[in-house]
Length: 135
Image (tube, rainbow, N blue to C red):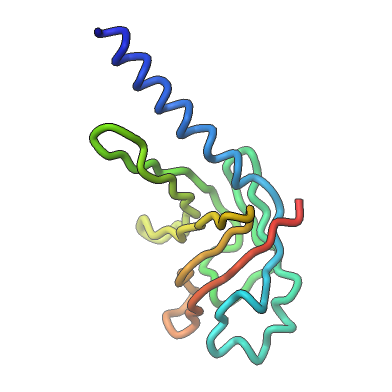
């Protein structure tokens, strides 16, 4: 019984670690799928914005924007559990500001998005950033 429990716990750990690999890659901002709020009129400025998710658990945006508090940082996978199973995996982008994190959600097609990303200044928020996988 004891070995069975250890096996289950180790399996859950390795399963949750492998989920992070699906985020590794390069993504381009999809302007038409994003909700840039008052930045929509300046969307040409942000057309080529890339998000690079590296295997060493760091990320980088290709340019600085007012609606993203941090251009570079680290990312991690948070696994939510119920009593008997893994319920969800969430990718967190560290914003370095008092444990504030942007949540990177995975779409069903391999693309990712951020809902209400943390901006540099409170007035610079946007509602949604959608990124298409390019690598």
